[in-house]
Length: 548
Image (cartoon, rainbow, N blue to C red; front, side, top):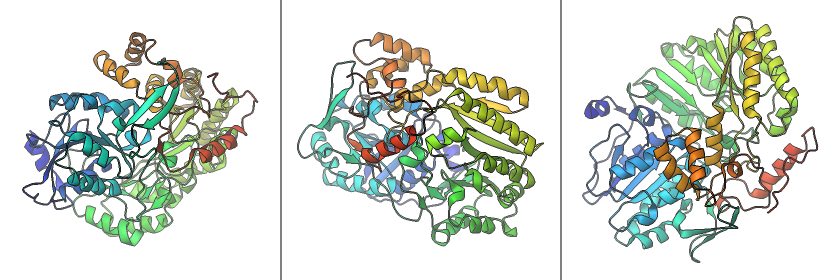
């Protein structure tokens, strides 16, 4: 079974034959193969390692693996989804490695993690990792391997001390966190000695050659897809958005130097093309890119595009997609309320949203998926009415176009101006209200689970004390009930669920990730927060500092 899965892969790079003394390294994705191999981040890191002759890399997934080294020196995980932490703990145990970093000794491999989840806020998972790579792999990976080579034969503590000197490499055990009380706020986060940096800076790759698939396979969740990263980050900077704030600045791939050569390479092995990025249509030469893909020689290509900016949905875009076997487009509108869009800095008018529906239909698409959100800070009842009214107008303006509205609950994310807000307790009721009003209109309403949003908020704002909780929930299952049960068991030892999820935090308190620096300093985030709250209707101070 295993060999047939790996045999089905078509590689777009040439692996190197490792040297005899290459570092034996396992690179894992904590989910099944068909999910993991669809992650562009995982593909890129694996290919980068496989092209180095000083590393012997083996892949590991929850269902299959390549031949693993008997004594790996390094085991790495790429993490795209918060709840995969359960699989990380299971995989470590299957390799006979203690799940807590402090229980490992010189006979155990160094355990590192990277990816969007850990770059955002690694703290709930910090006790399980020796090393966390913050930011873009392009720069970090080579620096990590080279620094490791220098201390390869030293003992574990010396290795960690040396690796902590590399920009973007975070070694959690070298930082001490103090709390006001066991179940209170963080008091301070300090390095344990003078030669460990006080602040770890996320690393940003600034080149104009972005990533593209290194492998194409029919066994992937998106069968035979070849993915090309068109842009990285997003210039819009919606106040809640991690994908924009955490990955700034906005970077675009060079059309001639990166995109076209990459697409030509990929289309030699498959006819499925995916254009990736938080805001693909904002590439300055997007029209030229579309024209390029519209050539008759690519008539059999099936094209899919990640979320596009609403006011860039032209008839031409819709026609190109329809001709390339795409039936629907996804746009993020957040809300139908102008007021709310001002609060979150979403530069968009209802007319533009309605026009997108008209253009999508005129270009031959059969459906339009919209993404919205409830519980945005400052949201009032009339904002929900405005969303329903907007959806009605779209239905009327583009009859026959299938509309679906996917809606999540606002979840605070680290390194964004909304990191200090808690989850709105009314959010679940608001999702039900939208459901009641939109269903009869023939609009397919798809709410994201409110309970899942609560767990997401917990992990998104969590600190190191949560590691105890995560170990308990592993045995209880991954429902919200399990987390509540674990909180009950740990009462008095850690803050309650409410503290992490619903409480508005004071802008003067020490945040769990205060020692980890994203692209923007806290002073800028506070400015953006003030700008947002200046648009609140009511003067109810939503951000009152907690009584510390």
